Image (tube, rainbow, N blue to C red; front, side, top):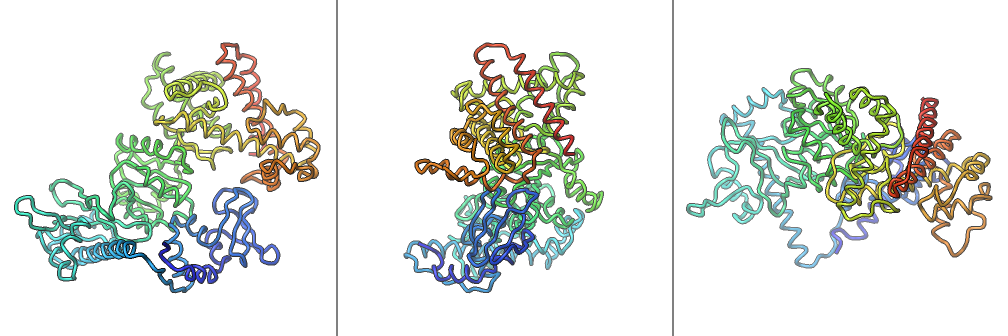
Length: 628
């Protein structure tokens, strides 16, 4: 049953000023009565295609098809669930929410959770007061000051200190009316093994409150002073705290991350505090653990680009590779901040100042570039066998990248380090990628060829190239090592990219009918299209580019929807004639890659097909240079 009444939700919906709400994320311009346009906040685009109709409280993007009402907009841009979005809008537009009738069990669960959150919030206040008001916490204040953390920053994050005596928080909480069972459920107290009595779980430690995306305290991270062990101690798993889903600072970083489209992922508490103090307010912390699926989902809801600012030591680099595996297949573009080895963000801010670290974050590089450099640095390139091993490792890393300036630059970098011609490096990398994809598919029980197999050039899309980054120059996906199920994920990602390529080509044919007619005449529908609906659309459009909706069959609603979507143009880019030529070349490149894969599977020669492919790549490169 709903937590709030339907009448409350409707009052919030009516109170929302849709233009004011959307304008916090993108600039809108009036385009007629009850009509505003702007650039879509959900994908990169040059030409505004994001349409807002204020009277209907509705938005729609003609590029990426994102659509919804005010609640959808807040959920997507601020990383909140529906209840959080409803409460946020009610606060923003001055609406009082009324609760719906609840069954007794649901009411009891809600009231218990609210009471536990209330207890944790009181504990955070208690620890914060203790840090600033007591002599016992003087050493903790001095330590935090030595780390360069200002009092204002520490107070904003409610950093505190737990008394060394074993029952102070326990006594204060009991006095406030909380039961021992609630103190145990929140992890604030634990029971003695010797006699069963209760005592404070956290003693003599710096306390970092951990909050969910809505700002509710769910637990604590605690750092020991001196040589006490363990150095870090977290709230135990329980009703409201789940470490695997927690990100330190997510409540304070959420809006800045949604606004910028980027979230910075650091390792520890002090790194996050220092980054926020330096003006980098979209930073969150992993709390010293490996990235989990739950954390990746939260990050994906918050922003589309994840910038890794983890320590530059070996452990930090391994953590980046693990993060790439977890991010694989999600709408997350991974980038890496090139931190000097042996330094963390907090150290750098203290040593070089906030401006230098902001500049360093601004120079983040695509994860694939970081991964390539890491492989090259660790490879033994002194003989041919070592170079072959490096190529075998590099091939699957570069495979997800589409033809782009970034891909060409990385291939040139590999060729230079291996002292081989660029063209030979490209061919060897592709061969190793195809071999790795075939081996992975065989291990997963998938066929080596056919519609479900990954195409060369997309063989390792499981490594994380995000959908938003897959189609253009400079794309910087999260290419990384394989993970379980990687072959199936790679196949799906390859098919998704093929479908986008085919859709873009047909949309541009409609945008430029004269040139489109000539381009369609060059198409072999069976060879160039992998999607059956795209083949039907190409056949339908052959003589109807001037009037695409005419003659659509009544018994094929899928085709009708597909052609209507094509009228909105290619996704995320302004239609140009050069874009049509590029789309044709991408279509031809995909055809050649499939033909090469099929020939190899059949044991046939691929020399001519490879030469044809290199010629297409040269044409694509020339087009990109002309655009530049």
